[in-house]
Length: 287
Ligand code: ADP
Image (cartoon, rainbow, N blue to C red; front, side, top):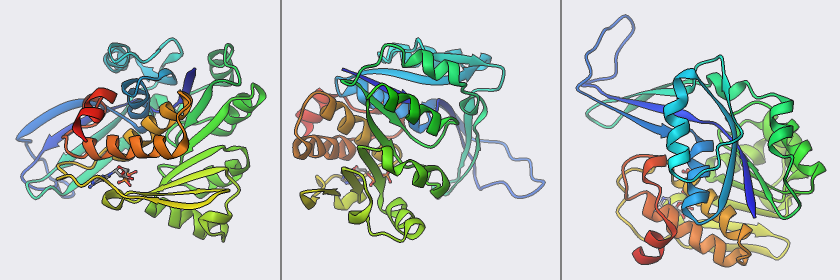
């Protein structure tokens, strides 16, 4: 069925620099690249690459038609991406020769979503569908309320982590995905261990160590596929997109987690974000 993803759309502007600029310094870059990013867009692309149908709910500015077109080219349903008066969300990323980076993130249009927009987008949604969201747009609790009204399965990737955003929504979630650092932050914020958080399925991703699945059946560990990482950006987004798409397609949780882990592993062997998320076929052929 359809995965309705309420999520950010960012343009990643990546500048290669000899060193990170200091206060008052003007520095010429030695290289530049522009790519589609944002956790929301990444997950929409991942869902689609995994063979799922994804309707993205989000917004870009007038300057963001390029990003919108790229989502369309990747097969994401873009009928509910609004055009905002604000600038498209973007990240200005400086990377120096040692690989150290500094990032300015401008949320822009990602924080301009309205109730009528989200309501419209979910108009045709049914209880066979999934509502997925992260923490890079506004209107999270509104989206969850509207999705619950229509009986959708609700999945959340709690990133970037913010206790005030996720804790009030825990009771509404069917699936929560978070990395190890975010899991520690959630435990600190709630005073509960992950196994005591009242969400049916919680997956804590552990990078090269795989992941841990907490459910009513207990805790199960999954090892990662050994790979040589080139760039770990987007591993979690790829993992979550594949996981949600696989569950949507009726795969058992064990098998879905296994597939998501293999997709995450293949992703870390590639440089870039949304543009290089692997397809299901590539994942199946790689491992
Ligand atoms: P995030 O990007 O959100 O921090 P992780 O780094 O935990 O997420 O990665 C998500 C998943 O991708 C992991 O659970 C694992 O399955 C896979 N993965 C990430 N890094 C590696 C790696 N170095 N080797 C193999 N698999 C990896």
